[in-house]
Length: 341
Image 1 (tube, rainbow, N blue to C red):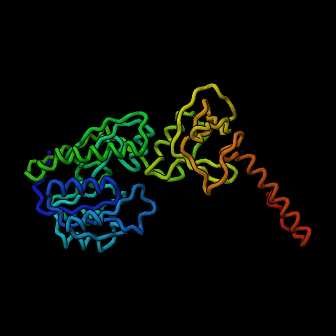
Image 2 (image 1 turned 30 degrees about the vertical axis):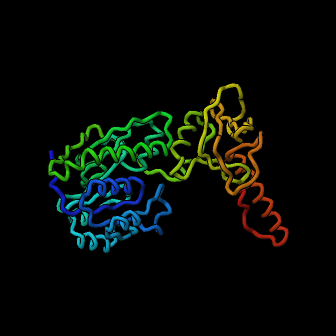
Image 3 (image 1 turned 90 degrees about the vertical axis):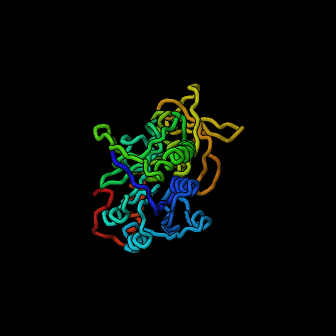
């Protein structure tokens, strides 16, 4: 069991909703926050649910600086200037290097929204939805591993198998509040302790990118519904294609089995809300909240969603052959046809 000394100077580093919620909790408990490092808005394009911590820090009269990478020399210099006892780094996918870890006398506090040691690693909210895993608001001491340091406090969250990413985000925010209200008074009284994680129970999850939200219409409807909920706000959304346009899908609804069609084919439209019924690998599924990019006509009944790789490749080869034939008619060339290679 590790005892954490009472910090006299605290710094917060972060970039998303959990970062702001943690900063709000520290300020609510009058913790001695002396500085805030927020991700530069110019570097936030790939960050789902980005939050600018500057306004919160300014309202509290706390020094605020921005950064793009934690590895920048200015970050280490700024931390040394603030001379913190404890640093909270919350909601940031960048790794904290050895140089930074050595600066605060009491170490770094990290945060992860899973019941550690389960679900260590990247994209935790998406994986929680995809796998119906156990969410929790977990604060822990950083070490040189991945979400593997001793646990300071773990606040359980009641997950629901039908939660979307935004539902979990709201539940995690509330759990951060509850967890900090229970734990910060002990920290400020010098009574906080940390327990080692059980390495035999550790599981890991990898990075997810926007392209991992592509819908495979051969998959079961329930699997597609889960992918849509995991990819929805604050994430970029699940997607498919229709006549060359991308269709972004935010909300789906499982349907009964009265309709049947070819996977990926639009079977019906619901006039009341514009939802379209699409055949999945087993049962149909309603695309309730969806949008075309760029905006265009509504999805018509009978339209085929997604690409058919064999057909697309065949058509491309035919076009290449036709173009090469036209080029040869103008200027014969000894080159072999790309179609024959």
